[in-house]
Image (cartoon, rainbow, N blue to C red; front, side):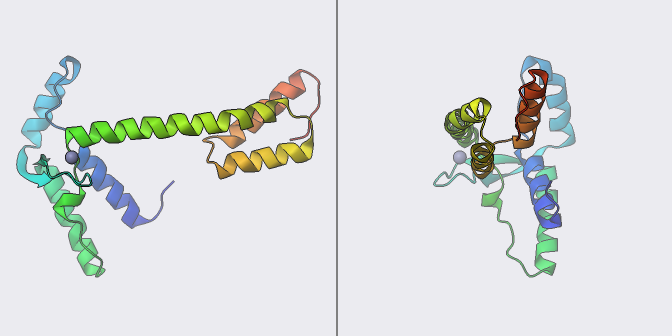
Length: 162
Ligand SMILES: [Zn+2]
């Protein structure tokens, strides 16, 4: 969990500003209209994607949040967030999503053989090295994996150390 109030505020601002009030899939239509009425677009900001100059609709809530946050930064004499650092255009959002998906797949492919070795292992020292490797490579739930393996081994009566 992120504790630094500055990071929390930054995440809140980004999540608030990355909402797209023009999203109108059938299921969300009414909510989208309400959002649009409650939080109208008041200006346009440059996309924060690198090298992208597309202008993105900025809702009033984003402008207000940014003002509040920048006043806090100003008091702390820290660099202010610029309007070009907040919103992504649809194209950049899609590209970032693709990159995130590809990175996740690559990570899964890298982790899978280590997980397989851990499942098959019966040597405590080897297991500890594999667990360290999984933590180093940022496996999302090493503790859960270990618990599952311990439970499985105790069910099968095989002992095992982990
Ligand atoms: Zn863009």
